[in-house]
Every structure is written in structure tokens, then in C-alpha cells.
Amino acid sequence: MSAITGARPLFAVALRQNTRTIAPWVVLISALSASSILAYSWIFPDPADRAELAGTLGGNPALALVFGPARNLATADGFNAWRAGALGAFFAGLMGIVLVVRNSRADEDSGQAELLASGVLGREARLAVAVLIAAAASVALGVVSFLLTIACGGGVAASMTLSATFVASGLMFAGVAAVAAQLGSDAPTASSLAIAVLGTCYVIRGYLDASDAPDWASWTTPLGWLSRTRPATDNDPWPLLAALALAVVLVLAGFTLQGRRDFGVGLIASRPGPARGGATANVWGLALRLHRGALVSWLLAFVGLGLIFGNLAPSLGDVLRDSTSAARVLAAGATDPDALSFALLVTILQIIGIVAAVTGVQVALRIRTEEVEYRVEPLLAGALRRPVYLASNAAVAFAAPALFLAVAGTALGVVAAAQDETISARDVVIQALVTIPAVWTLVALALAAVGAAPASQVVGWLGVVATFGLTLLGPTFNLPGWALDISPLRQVPNVTAASPDWAGLATLAGVTAFFLAVAFTGFRRRDIV
Image 1 (tube, helix red, strand yellow):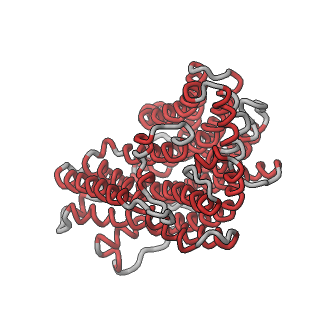
Image 2 (cartoon, one colour):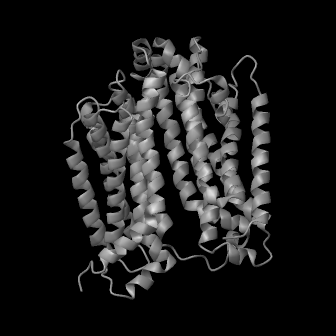
Image 3 (cartoon, one colour):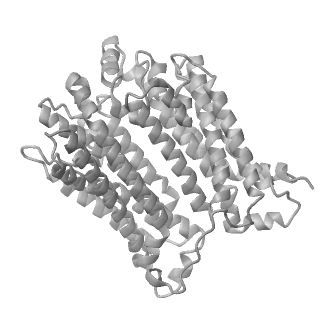
């Protein structure tokens, strides 16, 4: 029997099962590209508007950290390459990770893989199918993105190059996931390892783009290779060959490692549990234990974010002092040098707050994951009440981003104050603390979705995405004030202002309380699983 015997029928079945998982990724990433073409012509119809846009974003290190360098904002294709390039590649990589882990290690954890292995199925077939599904999804993403973008007015060469970077990212990080699936002791650990690699590559790419690093430095991260294709300027396909070669090497490494591990376990062995229950003997300790590994990794990441942004703050301040349009976007139009520096830090803390909200939403959505994997029902079969179970997880979901914001704000304030005597580390820390209620509103939205309508749990992620767009891109697109005010971060006052408007925090508290009421009421009344 061949090592991949049975892969063909298994692939056909698995592809049908994963269609609903793949479709949202393909649609959302493709829409990110197509909407950039449409938005550019609609919002910036005049050459003067486009020149102002280029002046605002072209030399902006903060936005380069998130979106990559803005190389050609005079055209719709150049704007699309800037707005959708780095983010699209990140989400395509995340898609590849999710699909590979779900169809390899997650099946082992659930017992489905053992059932399949009892039939005529080669040892390598499941991993081969997982990689093929990720590859098929990546190619589908590239084709749909290309067709949809040119249908909206994008150039053929630029759209093809940009879409090819999405395909390459999906393939590379599918390879990363294939290796992580062999290392991790279970599916969540494998996902955490692969996503940590993706996040590290993204941060390194962003730091290099936002700093004055030499051109060759972009070769130090795979996501940097994709940016070297320069869609809408050079349209250079050659860096994609390096990405394809890396994907092949990683997949082969994954197959090699799979042959050296036991079924159901990873090469990195999990530690045996304690003889006594300890903190996990109650539901509050159990909730913390479930998320401990991920929270520790996130904590280190937020320390790094604070240090990185703190080092970038002086150069960002120089950009804002030289560009009134950049100050309008990133510093709320502040003109006084002292106010300008702190207004910039407020924007940086908003970006960190959005990332912190991601951690809280992850914890909230884990409630549903535990539920569908039948680990909640046995707990509730005893004396544990539903509101207590939900409260234990909600406490972690609220405490984690609050801690992360405080830690990142402290690191940011200390480093920024050391380089700029006009900045007070104490003010930065206080500003970070008052940003926490806005993050809690997004977490509460995710809890409301999970508690009352788990089929609509994607609402939690949509809240984060909408806040991201309104906070970072809303001012650039000159959106009206009422639209910008939808973002919870817009309700956070500047603590150094002459008369801070604290009413916004009261509004956030009311909205958060409403979402929590929906979450607890819905969770108490609905069926489990």
C-alpha cells in the first residue's frame, strides 16, 4: 500500500466539508482588494486629492508598519497594492494555517483520524489532503481576487501580481502549519506555533518597512519577499519563486517529521498534569488554565509591541510635524508640538488596543469551541450553573486585554519618554488604562454573539475589523463624524487635553453592560450544542 493510498477520495470528501470554511476567507480577502479599487476612484476623484493622499501616507512609518510601504498612490492599483497587499497576505497565510491544522491534527484530537486509519488509508494521506485543501483554497483565492479586482477596474498585471502574493502566502504558511502540526502536542498548540511564526514574520516585515532598513533586509522575512514583487510598480514575479520553494521545503519537512512521531501526540511532548486538581479544581482556575499558554505568548508579544512603537515614536513625530495632512489623520489635527507628540501616542495605543481586542475575542470564541467539542456539557451536568461558567470565561476575556494594554502602554511610555522629554511616561500609562473600556466593548460584543447566537459568532471578528477600518482609515477617507464615532476607540478621551471628555467612557460602559446582558440571557436560555 502506498503512503498516500486513499488520498483522492478523502480529498473529495474533505473539500466538500471545508467549502463553508474556505468561502468566507476567499470572499473577504478578495473584497479587500476589489474594494480598494472602487474606494480610490470614489473617494479620491481629483488629482489634488490623490496628491494629498500620497503626501499623507507615502512617508508614514506608522501605516507602513501595518500596511507596508506606499510606493505608488497616484493610481488605483498602487493604492490597492498598499491597502490590500500586506493585510491580504497575512490573512491568506492565516487561512492556510487554519485549513492544514483543522484537517490534520484536529482530526487526530477528535478521533476522526483514527477511524479513517482503520480503513485502507496510507499514513501520509491525511497530511497530503490537508496541504492540498490549503493549496486549492489559496489558488481559488488568487483566481477570485484577480477576476473580481479587474472587474472593478484594476489593471491586469498589477492585479495578477497582487493576487499571486496571496496564493504564495497561503502556500508558505500551509507549509509552516504542516511542520507545526507535527511539533504541537495537540491542534491548539500546533495552531499557536504556526500563528506565532506568521505574526513574527508580519511584525518583522512591518518594522523593516517602518524604519530606515536597507533594501536587502526585506529578504529576512518571507512576507518581505512578497512585498518585493511591488505590484503596480515593478510587477516582479521572481520573488514568488523563493516563496514557492520555501513552501515545498516546509511541506517535505512536515512529511518527514510525521514519520517520526506517534499518532495523536507531537514531537514536543506535553507535560503530565498534576496529581491534584489544584487551581483547575474550580471553574475559574479551569478557564485560566485553558488559555494560559496563549496568554503568556501574547504577553511577550505586547511587550515587544510597546518597545517597537516606543522606538518609532520620534520618527513618527518628525513626519507629523512636516505634514499637516498626516497630523490630521494620525494626531487628530493637533498642531502644537507637545500636543502633537502625545496625540500620536494616543493613535499608537488605539492600534495596540485593537490587537488587544483580538486576544479577548479569541477567549470569547473559545467558549463555543469547547461547546461543540462536547467539553461543556459534562461540566454543566453537575452543580455548575451556566452563568458561572460563562462568567469564568468572560473574566479571562476581559482581564487579558486589560493586562496586555497596561503592559504595552508601560513599555511604550518608558521608551518614548526616554527619547522625547516632552512625553510623560505616567500620562502614557494612564492613556492606556482609559483605552481599556473601548476594548472591553469589542470583547462584550463577541460574548453576546457566542452567548445568544453562536451561529453568528463571526460578529465578534467583524467588530474588530470595523473598528480597525474606522480608526485607521476613516480619517483618511474623510468619513463623517457620526460614522467615525461608531468605533469605541473614538469615545476614549485624550487625558492630557485641557478638559477631557469623560462622557464617552460612560457610553462605552452602558454599551458593554448591554452586550453582557444579551450574552448571559442568551446563554442561559439557548440549547447547548
